[in-house]
Amino acid sequence: MTERVHNFSAGPCTLPLSVLEQGQTEFVNYHGAGMSLIEMSHRGKQFVAVHEEAVDLVRTVFGVPDEFDVLFLQGGATLQFAMVPMNLLGSGQKAGYINSGTWAKGALADAQHYGDVYTAWDGADCNYTRMPSTDEIGIQPGTRYLHLTSNETIGGIRFSDWPQVDVPLIGDMSSDYMSRPVPWERFDLVYGGAQKNLGPAGMALVIIRKTVARENNQEIGRYLRYDIQADKGSMFNTPPVFPIYMLGKVLRWMRDQGGVAAMERQAEEKAGMLYQAIDNSGGYYRSPVDAGSRSVMNVVFRLPSEELEAAFLSEADAASLLNLKGHRSVGGIRASIYNAMPAEGVEALSAFMSDFQSAHPA
Ligand SMILES: *Cc1c(COP(=O)(O)O)cnc(C)c1O
Image 1: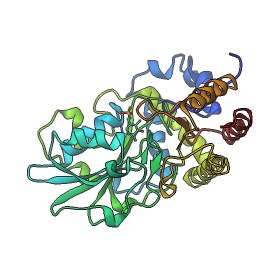
Image 2: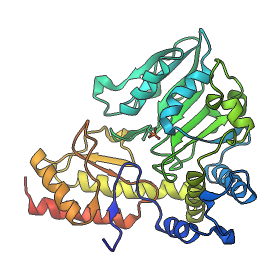
Image 3: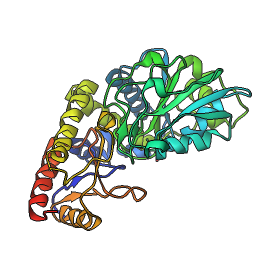
């Protein structure tokens, strides 16, 4: 393969070409050090500078207030499913979880081991085709936090409006991190795996209110304690040096594009193009999710039959439009169009959809 394809993978996923090329240029001999960045001590001057710049960029690009710590932790988003309740729920404390689909269910299942958790809204009744409005969310007395999944990567739904509740929010933002601003005053913690919007796999970005990081309600191993991780600036043990380095480059790319405001505008435009292709297809392409909850990162749709879906996928592959197969648990088509997906990729897909429909009438 000589050219890059349009990669619609849900994660790991496409990254900005300029970032990959810059990493390639620096990889063997980092800024004249005579060694690669991944061969250096994580406590040496050059890596520490990379690490500090990455933290600063998270703060500036995402508008993170000073009351929050920025942590780079291993274990991806999945370890946060457990770390959040381990640290924040003491005995007798409870937490509400919005069950919006596959990922939310995982967070809820893991939290059950560490505290008294309950389902504050259950999307099972609507087959996970939408997010709840605030008045549908049931908060029980004594609730420490409400956990939400801002974007369900598999189901293709997102919160268009953040819930207005009286308890702090905790958000899994793995698949729409830095694609829109966050009302920080309502959140105690946001987290997400890096491998969708932010860089390569291998770490989670955790942004936690400083006072909350020090709650530490259970006796747990040191790596798992937010207070230790925050006090040590994510350097309690060897941090994930390569993901941190690449994340810094992706964030610099975002900043140069115009930051989160530009990412949000581009996401609306790119997703708008695909939803328009769906809505203007006379019912040939069908979005299974509620219009008010449509994700702008993972656009899911169906064709008139599974045979046509299989043909769509194989012809798309041949046209260098890759990884469009929906998650095996739901089937159909899923186009993941994260921040780094160029508009040209989405234009190519939208043109392909129209050509495919003409060639294969229902
Ligand atoms: C991908 C994803 C996860 C899992 O992330 P890992 O880093 O692989 O643990 C969790 N939540 C959401 C919403 C995701 O999209």
